[in-house]
Length: 363
Image (cartoon, rainbow, N blue to C red):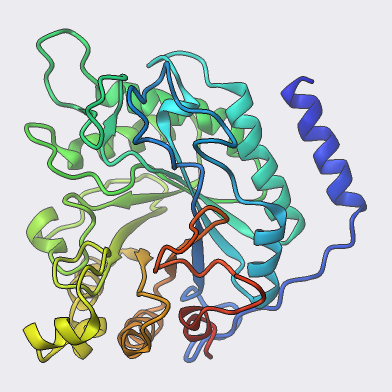
């Protein structure tokens, strides 16, 4: 069956289904229409990259190595008021040959997700989850080849390759009513001789020249770390957008190494740092202050705490309070059917609502 036919059939099925309207999420100091809303990343479409030889010509098998969020998961979060989704995807699956055509089958899966979101009155941020890289099947993950870095073998990944991808995605997706924003690149890091500031500006320029008017999320260099934002990205905002419609994206985790892996227990963290309870404020404040000084919008594109350790909940609550006061959206990492026992997952299990989700929904 052709992808277009699948999309039409899905849209028709959804239109005929009884869709429960999501409950709006009102925030302290904001209200229903506040820009300081809270969303969630729906992971799965970026999974499977650790398979040996992963790359454009071997992107893995759908349903085996990676998946997309189901309508049931999306409906669950919509009904509790989390109506903004961040959808991580992989470049290698969308464009198997650099500069080539998009993969219509993979694009169809994105359309299915967007159509479902639209029926649920939800918005989706399309997040290119590639860390400033593209994998060519050389078993070099998580490194891959850095966008903008010189390559002696003539197989370098250029900023033009990245803008080509986004312009082609824009042509297909920008009219969809569920699209909230395009997130140009997740967590670029260790870029070597490449300049993420120049690369991101190039992509913004290319999209605007091609007539795209979508809101664009711009990650920071060095993993988008909120605490070290200015050190890693400079004192000044760097994107010049003729539409003035960009949002800078920072990530904020609370463990000692900022990684979000939480390898130490809360007690161990507190033994090393007596001020661990203040990290919800201290780690996000540098980014929020930077946005205020520069007069730009920001978003916390990722944050998360172990779901089974209640000691972390006040730290999360403090971050949410700080972000709400600055009318800054926060997207939680993460939900998705394939997380299993991952400690950061807020995917519902057996009807249980994860404790971090209850904190996210607090008014």
